[in-house]
Length: 619
Image 1 (cartoon, rainbow, N blue to C red):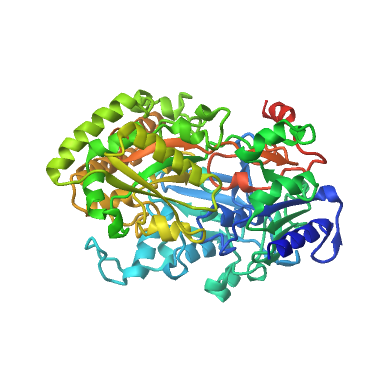
Image 2: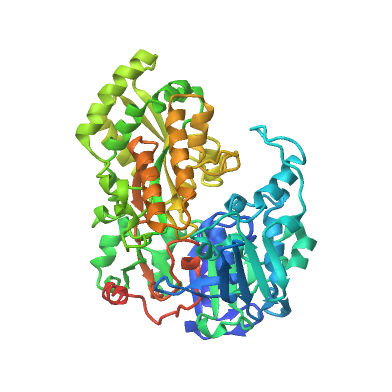
C-alpha cells in the first residue's frame, strides 16, 4: 500500500504540467506540495480549522485584505465608512463574478451574497463553529440564533429566547453593490475581523438549494477569489486553478496549486524536494543538521516567516472525563488548588521543551503571556505585552517558586484528602511532528524538579483522527498544550478561548476550551477566581473608544489569568526550517485571520530559497 501511494505521488508530480481541462502550463506556473491531513469539508462558512480555512482563504475574496507588510487594503470592497451615531458600517462593493469548478462564469457577486452567508452561519442546523463570534457584535445576531435554538423556551440560565425575523439582524443589502453591518456597540477591531472566514460571502441561491450539502465537493460551491478548486479527490489530491475572472487576477502569479495527499508527507517531503518533485517540505530537527552539513542541500534550507498570530499555552482540565485508572476525583482536588497549578506553571521549563522543535534558538519563541509580543500596539505605539500589569509579568519558569508552591500544595491537598503522587494525564496527537518528544521532555523535567512523589505525568498517544473531538473536547486529558489563533487585531481575541459571557452563549458545549466555565460549574473555590477574570474581561470589552484604557484593562485581565495559573503561557509558533520555492515575505500578512494562508501575490521561484536569501528578504 505504501509503495502504491508513493508511486501515485510521483506520477502526479511528473505530470503536473497537465492539469484539469488538459491545460498545459509552464513548470514555474505550477506549485506542488504534499499534505497529510485531509479536510472534512470545503465549507468555509462553518469550519474553524486552519486546513479547512485554506479553501476560503484562496477561493473567496473578503471585503478587505492585507498586503505583505500587514497594512489593510481594499478587497471585495473598494471603500467603506462608519456612522458612529447608528453604529453602522457601509461598504461599496466592486464588480465581481462567481465561477464554478471549471472557472466558468455563474453570476455576479452582490451584497445579498454577504447577507445570505451570514444567515447561513446563524442557522443552527448548519453548525457553524464560528457563529459565536457574531454574538454581541452584529445587531440581533445572537437573538436570531438563540430564537431558532430555543423557540420561545429558556436556556440553561433561565433566559427566554423568542424567534425573531432575520430582517432584524444587522446585515443589509442596500442594493447590489452596497452592504451595511449594524453593530451592537462600537467595535474597535471590526474592520480587521472582515479578513476572516466569518464575513466571507457565498452565492445565495446555491446556499438555499444545497443547505448542508454546500461545500461538500468542488462542484457544490462557487468561487469569487483568486483561485477555484478544479479537483477535490479526498486522500488523493486538491487542485486550485487561477480564476481568470477575478478582479485582481493580475496579482495572481501562480497559475495552479497542486496539493497531493500522503499520510507520510512529513517523511517523504524532504526526499521529494531533493528530487525536484515538490516545491515545499518541512525539514524537521532530525534531518536539519544533515541538510545543513551537506553541500547538495545546505543552500535549500530557509525558514518560515515568524508568526505572531498563534499562541500556545498549557490548559488545565477542570472537568475530567477520563477513566478511573487516572484518578479523576483526585485530579479535581489537585487542579482546583491554586498552589498546585502554580507549581506546575513555575515548574515547566519551556525552553527545554521548545528545544525539541528548535534546538538552535528556543528562547526566541518562548513567551510569558498568552498574547504574543508584537501582536498589537496601543495609541502611543506601546506593545500590548508591555502595557500596564502585563509589564510586571516575568519568566513563569522559576524553580524556587515551583518548589515553594509544591510544598504549600502538599499541605493543603493532604488536608483536603488528596493522595500523592497526583496522576497527570498528558495526551498527544501522533500525527503532529515531535509532540510525543515534547511530552516526554515535560515528563522527565517536571518530575525531576517537583518529584515523582508529587506528580506522576502519564504520557499517552491519542487518536490520529479527530483528536480535537476525541481528546480535548471530550475532556480526556488533565494537562495539555493547546493553541489559539487570533481572529482580529485587538487583545480581546486572546480572551476568546477562556472567556464565557454571562448570557451562557460562548465557546462552551465542549467546542472551544471551556475549561474555565466548567471550573465555575463545578462550584469549586476556583470558580470565584474564574468569575473575577470574567468580570475583568467584561470591563475591558466595555471600553471601545479609548484605545489606551482598553489595552490597560485587557492587560489587567490577562495578567490576572496568569498570576492565578488558570493557564500557562508557553510559546509562539516556532518558525520551521523549510525547503521552499516561495519568498515567505512576499504574500499577504496579518497576525490574525486567514491572510497568511493565501497564495495570491506570490511567485513560484525557479530555485529553493537559501538562508542568505531568506535573511535578505526579511530585511
